[in-house]
Length: 275
Ligand SMILES: Nc1nc2c(ncn2[C@@H]2O[C@H](COP(=O)(O)OP(=O)(O)OP(=O)(O)O)[C@@H](O)[C@H]2O)c(=O)[nH]1
Ligand SMILES: [Mg+2]
Image (tube, rainbow, N blue to C red; front, side):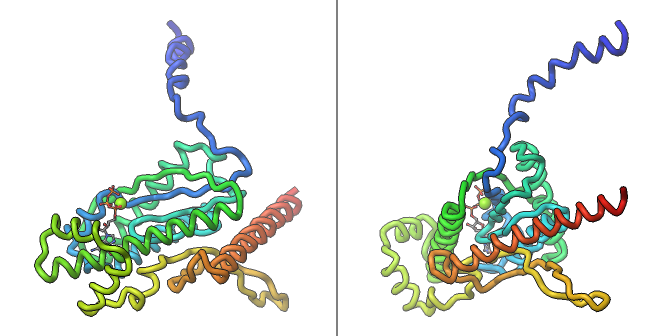
């Protein structure tokens, strides 16, 4: 058998890559949610501050920044709890191949997070993130999805503070779980207030998350004023359900489109000057 025939014999294996043909529909905005794997355990191993450690949030933000630096163009990344929610509009990585997008993004975030942990905690840790695709379809759905994740962050925030306080006063984990199940949000606020925690006055990033996006700024270059872009870290977010929140997201979506168009123009000009 020739080498060619031998290779043909194995060709059928590519047909068995049964999930590799899965694509996100073109022109469809989607989120990739990357969630820290076993972060409860990790936070215990690293002895991170309870209920929130700013260094963990900074590691997540660093990992999000790395996605921009490695050439991906998400419109925004919403960071909360142990997750990163990356929104993609028209600049879709890997033509929307689901396996490729999920695995490469999770790998970049996991390795960046591990490096960042080593720098901040002086400890080596193997960190992993799982990754999933959420199809968002249009602007309303984008806002709705972000509002959901922000509400989830608020709920986690309340539970994390409650857990921390109840542990401090000597309750056992199983007892706390029972207590939390039976308490309404109002009652939880009152109980924690009695123990010196005002859930409405904790740092905003703990309650509402952090947003990363590209923001334009003007720069003078040889007597000309040109638009440049920098990554903005917004640690003081409004509620996405508020008017201010909706306006911020609309603004970011407009900037994303403006940047995409100017990048396309730039590429065309470069192509012409080369030919
Ligand atoms: N103490 C502390 N814990 C944190 C911090 N950030 C994240 N965590 C932990 O991370 C967990 C995130 O929730 P989950 O994603 O549901 O838990 P997980 O252990 O990562 O579980 P899987 O995602 O299913 O693997 C929280 O419950 C906390 O235990 C932090 O700043 N401080
Ligand atoms: Mg997790």
